[in-house]
Length: 89
Image (tube, rainbow, N blue to C red):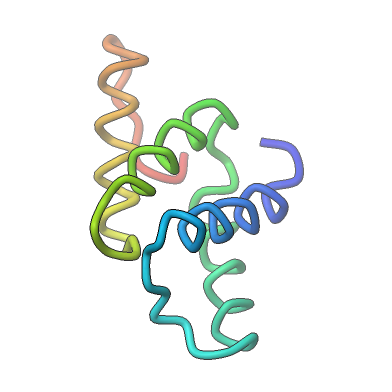
């Protein structure tokens, strides 16, 4: 995806707007979270990433890496039935 950092910032805003309590204490932790998600999910197609964020925004808790990995796996199975890709690839 182009400009993955912007996508991750929007994801964080989406989670907060959905009322999910962020466990991130302060700007330094938010920056760490953004960098980690860019490294891990920045290579995903933008549409696939957006589907995952919308799914996770509807959950009860702020998403963990495990939650995002699962959402990516599920979305890939639905959108790309013939291909099996690892999260972040």
